[in-house]
Length: 373
Ligand SMILES: Cc1cc2nc3c(=O)[nH]c(=O)nc-3n(C[C@H](O)[C@H](O)[C@H](O)COP(=O)(O)OP(=O)(O)OC[C@H]3O[C@@H](n4cnc5c(N)ncnc54)[C@H](O)[C@@H]3O)c2cc1C
Picture (cartoon, rainbow, N blue to C red):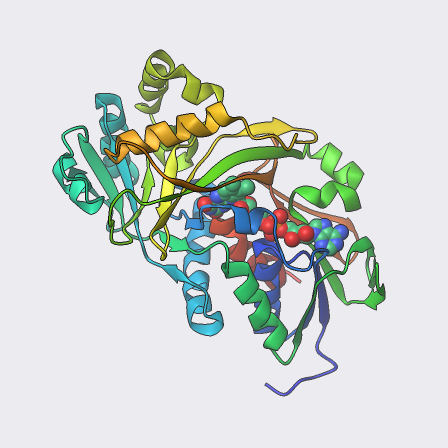
């Protein structure tokens, strides 16, 4: 397309997955785009996660958004060189209560292509030599695994290389009003401003963040060496994941919660979602714990990390897991809504995912906001 100075100019605050989802959608719609990112590269939630595009386990609006986002991710594999693959998900059951949740899920809410597998099949998918501890599994083929460390950098590079796109790093936005944003490098005029500042939304719009009860959720993560060659298989969910994701919610879930409360209460105490994704370099991204704060302390509790590692090692029938890295991630959380969408002033849209699924829905949120302009 020939560059047009008459194309509407959309200025986007934040080069995480939500901001970039808006940038891609705005470029696809023919707009001019400037993305402003305070850091020299995006280093917050969008690079600290599992890279799990968890389409099959979402319900309601999150499920619709996840379905819309899935092909957008695949288009960015083609267009931007993003590393993402249709890994699918394996949800494993090691107890009768977990198996009941999976059976109910497949019987009542199965996404296309999803099916139950035996414990032996689940073990084979994970290359576990003797998988006697696995009762069953559910295989969900639609889900994707991306490399979270490179994905947003590659999308940003694609936006910046676009003839109507630009990404300015090391540029902090101090205020946004219809028609312009004030930045640490001067004022920029805009036809529309999208604020995708993640958990930092309250720095620009404190009243809005307070009104929508936005807090910080702190999560502990580790990268480990796979205990054996695993062949880059599916993302793996466990019983605690079944308590977290909406599509597993059903009459069997309460029995599972009671079972975990009785047998492994420490997992509920740290609000664990014991899961991992398999990355191209043979490492596993393993997590995670959850704790909501007004200002998250930076300290990692080693007992929490050890619990996640022990659970994952037991699942994989590995004596131990070699830890390569540990880190804390933060995302915006709220007990009021899953997605904060607001127009605090004319010409400004604020979009913050306030539950931990921004990699799954962020690209689709961008498409929806831009379509509504
Ligand atoms: C440990 C962890 C695991 C997770 N796992 C998954 C998963 O597997 N799947 C999934 O779907 N979701 C997952 N999530 C959630 C997901 O990562 C987030 O929902 C998503 O990354 C949020 O994207 P964002 O663009 O809103 O925020 P961010 O990635 O935090 O990006 C916001 C950007 O805005 C910039 N910014 C903020 N204020 C300003 C300003 N004033 N001026 C300029 N720039 C500004 C920030 O520097 C930042 O780069 C996980 C999150 C964490 C922390």
